[in-house]
Length: 119
Image (cartoon, rainbow, N blue to C red; front, side):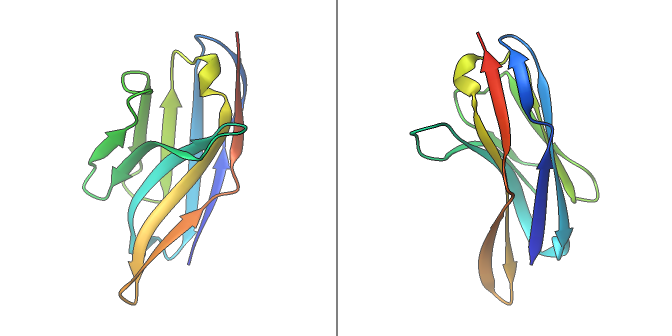
């Protein structure tokens, strides 16, 4: 199994920046892709950005041009650089890893880190 631990959340003013980190441990060689999701109060969890083993990336339209996802060469840490933050970016941000073990797909989640953007 893969365990994920996020860090880097906090309070920032609109227009500011934050960098989230997610460290993976366990059977990281089974991971195919990692990503970030977020959930605001009263809303469903939504995709923010993902990165695959081949470095392909995907972003939600609402963060394109402002957020950048990256991953270490060792594939055990994924980052989310968030610039030009807006109050609507306020949410709990969750790290996610997807992979295959014994021909079965799995999804692992971190515990979440709070990001609050003040206006």
